[in-house]
Amino acid sequence: MSEATLQCPKCDSSLHTHERHGVIIEECPGCQGVFLDRGELEQLIDAESRYLAELSDGENPQTTYQGRHRRGIVQQIFSGGAG
Image 1: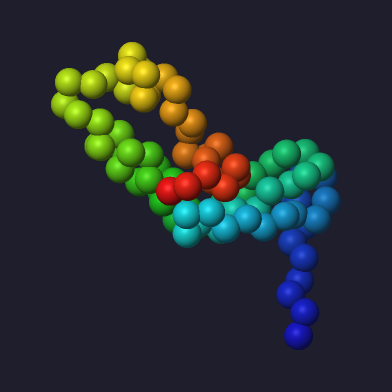
Image 2: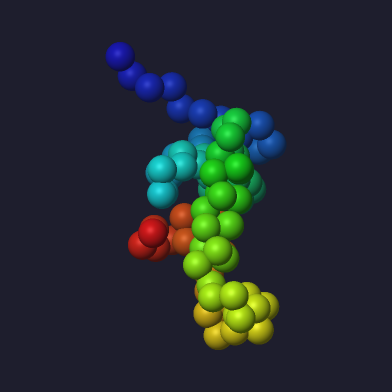
């Protein structure tokens, strides 16, 4: 049985599916839209919260090297970064 290809609701292109860090994300190569299923945005927010929780109490994520130069969680997901 073949798996149905999902279509972008905006531009009707075929969506590409990515699995990163346990989250399944559909991305449209046509309009660059990103589509998440129920609960996946919360998973991404939780991952970002875990990252920020690992900073020491004295570090401000907006002013430390680690905070300023870290890639956002969504960029890490699409680039296939370690995590």
